[in-house]
Each structure stands twice: as structure tokens, then as C-alpha cells.
Length: 171
Image 1: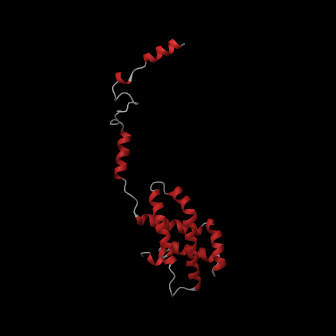
Image 2: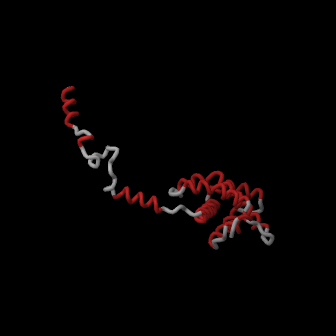
Image 3: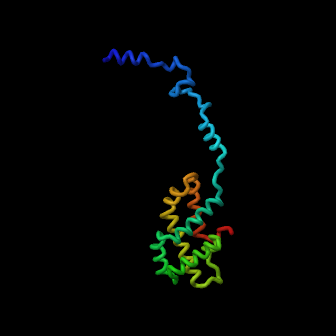
């Protein structure tokens, strides 16, 4: 038995007897013929980073969609108890602003000429946005933004500051 194993090992070609390009396990294996590695290397060099404006837009869309979803109901119920606004009114105002593509700044910043209902909406929306950024943002980043997760993680703290101080948001 040992003799047959030894004879089988002797029949195997040695690394030194083969050319380095022919042996795939050789440390000097050449990838020049591999089309896929050159394409992926080219794509890595030409891939543009995601702009802050695009990240901000993605966060804005996610905040609005979260506020309209059923996940926001517990946070919305807390806001309804504190503010003078109903769930139906909140959803109507938010969906109206979503259709008009209103800026996030206009949805968060209370102005002097706003009615009591609109002011309550803005305060409730601000608190729901904070809840999203504290609790649900990680699931959203991991689910939706697979290509630039690190950039979205880094932008989260900036987004939280912008939500807390909407007067600093640019139009």
C-alpha cells in the first residue's frame, strides 16, 4: 500500500518542472490571459464615488418612505399624543409634500406663517426622522445601498445634525 502511494506521488509533476504560467498554484501565476480580472480591475479604477448630494437625496427619500410606512406608527402615536395632529392628517400632508417634491428643509423648518397643524406635522416628522436615523438606518443601508455603504454610514451623523438643525440645510 505504501509502495503504491509513493509511486503515485513520484508521477506527479513538480512545480519546478512546469512553467509558472501553466501551474495555477504557482505564486508567480500570470493573470494576463484572464479577461475577467482585467475588466474588474478597470471597473475598480473608473468607479466614481457617490456624491454627497446623491446620498442626501437617498436619505431624504428613505425618511419620507419610513414616515409613511407602518414601522413609523409607534413613533407617530407618541407624536400624536404630544401634538395636535391625527395620523390621517399627517399622512395626507406628507404624501402631498412627497408628490410636490418639497425639500426636506421645508418639511422640517417651522415658519411664522405656518398653521398649528402644519407646525405639529413638522415637529412630528422631525422626531420620526430622528427615530429612523437612530434605529432603522442600519437596516436600510444594508438592504438598499450595497455599493457604497461606508459613505452612507459616514453621512449618517451629518444627516442627524441637519435634522436637528434644519435651518442649516441648504435649499
